[in-house]
Image 1 (cartoon, rainbow, N blue to C red):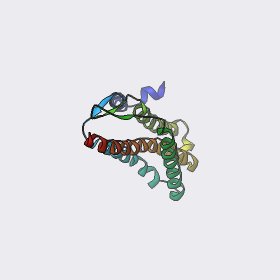
Image 2: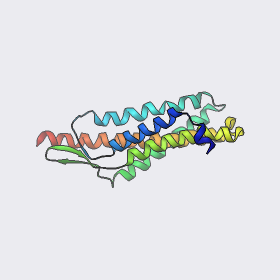
Image 3: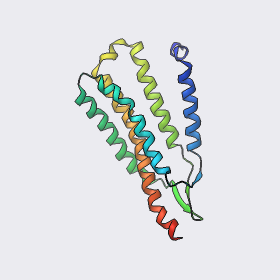
Image 4: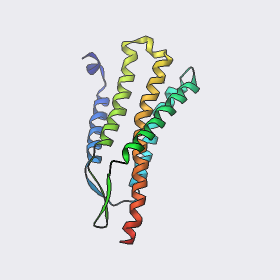
Length: 170
């Protein structure tokens, strides 16, 4: 309970805002703006900047970068494979519909919780603060979640681009 009480209020407000935004993005809706897919790509790229500080302060920068790239690539490939079975975007009545799914909510929560847990662990286990293995796992896990979110954005953009010509011809 000590870590809950010691957490600043701004972190909890951020969590509530992320839950609200994730829930809104998870609802079924009609995509009117053709820039929707681009926003799905820009948001994870901005979040990826979080890891720059971790890489900058590492003792072995190439190893940390490799860990982040491996986590990111695994996530891209995994979601690309899984996305084949998910038919999230459809064309109905000359409009592009996004079906309800909670992928974005889970991803945003995964990024938040992994950042929160990896920020708390060094307070309880001070030896982790300068541990290269801890840093490698931290960067790899966070980039895994960011990679899944980016992959969702890339595949959504691709699917929307496939549906747009059908929409224009209809």
